[in-house]
Length: 149
Image (tube, rainbow, N blue to C red; front, top):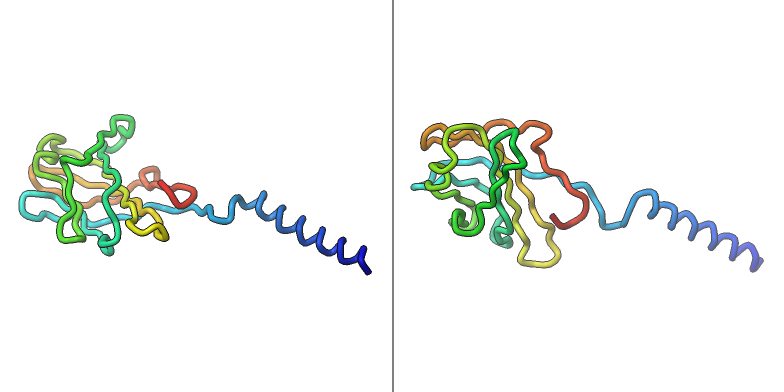
C-alpha cells in the first residue's frame, strides 16, 4: 500500500514538473499591444486611452514606418497625460517629425502592483498639423512574454 502511495505521488509530481517545463513559468503569458485612437486637442495630438487613472506613463517612442532602428524616445518633456485619459504629443513633436507615416509606442506602468503593464502600438499619419490613425502592419504589433515590458 505504501509503495502505491509513493508511486502515485511520484507520477503526479512528474506530471506537474513536466507541464511547467513544457509550458514555461506559470505567470508567463504572451501579451499583444493595445491600440488607441489619436485626436487633436488644443495644440496637441492625443491618444485616448480608457482606464489610465491607475497608471503612469512609463515610456514613449516614435519612428518613421519601416525605420524602427531610428526610434526616438519622447519622454518626458514632449508628452503629458491630460484629464486622466489622454496621452498627448506636443505640437513641437509633430512639427519636428514632419509629414509621413509613423509608429508610436508607449507603455503605462501600474500604480498598484497587482496590475499588468499596458503596452500600446499605434500607426499614425502626419500631414501638416493634421494627425490621424492608420492601420498597423503585422510586424508593428508589439508582443511580449510575461507581465512586464
